[in-house]
Image 1 (spheres, rainbow, N blue to C red):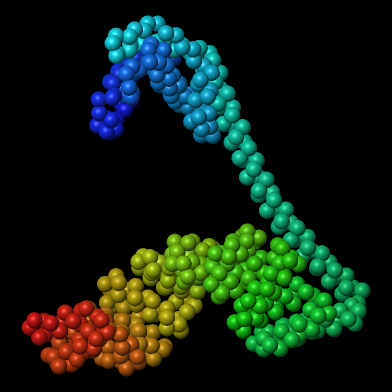
Image 2: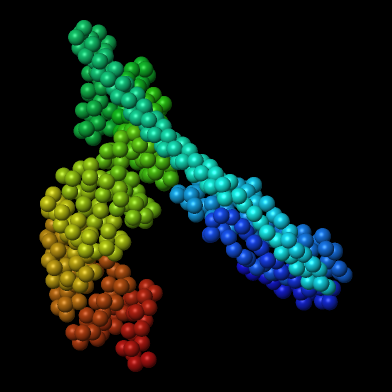
Length: 474
């Protein structure tokens, strides 16, 4: 083994450095052949000033490197001999174990001028090495057992939380049954009637009316958990997201294990742009209810829309599909995520599954058409865009993309008609003008082509400028 000290600083200090070379022959003797052998160590050092310091200085420098060499070899051997590879002990800890096993003997040494020679033997008792390997294995086993116990404890804690939640629900149900059997007092009946009326208003979209009832009940300190949950939802629908967050936080103070409150607060925080906080709340909702489909849906949408983390969006939508395989809109969402990742075949397959329940949704056919266009299946893309246009004939992008599919099929008249319609509907973007100008050019209508390219060039589109130069012969 060769450890060579570099020469990068030598030129800077000139002749004040003296060259010192140490050669060391090392014998590491044990009963195991993989540790026995001869190793040659060489080290070149530089020192400022006259002498290196005599025999003891040479010996100290050489032996420190000899010891390191032997310790590294023995530590590596212990690690290899341990079935688990000693995954739980650091290199430093293994070196400390090796250090206790080795005895060093100097056999011969001499100093000739500025060159020092050392022959040494390092002896390690095979039985002690075997014991050390067993000890390391035992430590590994204990650490693995501790990790497994910690994992079981964490799972048990989650189970306790779930059981606590189930106990609370059971108590509520028991109290409800008890009241039903005994006959409810007039005050409880009135509260229940107000809650039912607030809920009817909520589902009719009369959110202000529902909030008024919840405010009255909260002033009377009646059914605070339900009132905060529903009033928060009403505020959410009114786009008063700060108030919604406050209400869902109040609900969580009353019931810290309520997954609905975490989910709804997360959705409100998304609207406020507090994305990282929202992800924490979605995560907590899923921890409390691992089959909470809406949490996977809305967290996936957050990854897709706000973070462009398409991999995580696909994972959440896949989990949503597992929870609700009958929900075909979940396939649409996953298709959107696949499309963003340019995985167009998978996206198109998901859109086909979504079509079973979304056959009247124009955006489904538009997205499917985009996949077909990118896969080069232009005639199928045209059919898909046509279906989107039939369902919603006033969207400029539907005509724009169908026009592009027509152009790829060299159906110039149809493509031009679609671009005219797209521009009429307000899609006066530079790229549309460049493409329509190109279609005019193919039909021999150079003046119209020039007009479109000039407009595109004014909007900063470089292709418009390039085509104008070609048209003008520049």
